[in-house]
Length: 507
Image (cartoon, rainbow, N blue to C red):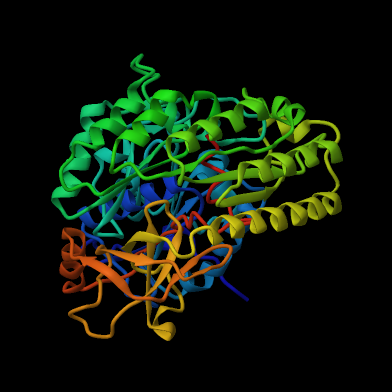
């Protein structure tokens, strides 16, 4: 029989030399927060746990978007109980959206948890861990408003050549299916000068690609009264010397304006890629979702984007089985998806989320119906993505190589990376290390094969440019590396049917 270990049984081991591991669930904002949590812990004297080793501190950065998020967390906590019983001084912390929502219930359901902290006070984690250790009791601290902008905190970035840059936190929308605004709060914007200063600092460290983050990124500026602020920010990124690629996620169709399209098209380092959540192609369902656009407006935005950037890759989020969705409503979604020619779609089966208006709506769609519609949608979007990818066979693309993008690279003598439009490309590369690209390097190559979710380029490299990002990767490789942060990095271009990675960034 397993014996429960409470926080009061913690040893009085000092912080110095203690190890940590962070397990991240959810959207890109959580990934960004996890890098900050890692930076905070290392600044406080913790060090990353070695691969496969039990950590002294395990931090869960949670998501609350999907119904099974609770089960996933408590299942993971249960699995850790035996390890904690045999590891003196081990601590477990739970943060993120689920912690903000469930608060003290987490300690009630899992009394062996030592620290619970919310989305607004991630900077408190080291202090809370130390307080739990000294006072020998669980610490639960949930703030209702943002204490400090996450980007003001120390960070431990997983990539030396690519980085997330948060421009805003929170959301002012009231989508009936989404719990995120109640957990992240109303939108808080950073000043443009602060954003650009962070980007310039990152570039000086070797970063050459940044992704601007916000729950509704193109509403940026609402807090300081400048509706053109996001377009201006994109153009300002174009003036940062050494910044090769700029991406952003996720916009909302209601706030997506022509000045942003013009800024994208006219700023060379802003990539021809757009993630634009659709959610539904039915105007009746969009109205029930409290999404303030209709399918005609959505398609018109895509038309204007493609007129300005003919080769732009457009991806989306779609929810199947929202309460009240009829077969005619679902057919409208299929029609809009076909007309949109998405490069990829993150498709989700609607699930009830307590605390949202949709949870108590009548006419919840039966699970078998949702499943059947979901399968029809994924079949369609896969075929559309494959059609779009086949258009690229024979064309030359620029690839920025990356770590961890190709699981079969070693077996296929390839290296993988992203094209400018963010499509995943597996590239045949020379065996000679002097001719082989490093993660962060850029090369021109020609597409020889297209699959629904990736491209191959087996004709070799037409040109290789060694970059400061590649230098930064090489410099980090010379240092001891340990996987301390389990990051759920977004794989835009590969639909994730049931994963919440994109759902939190609903735009």
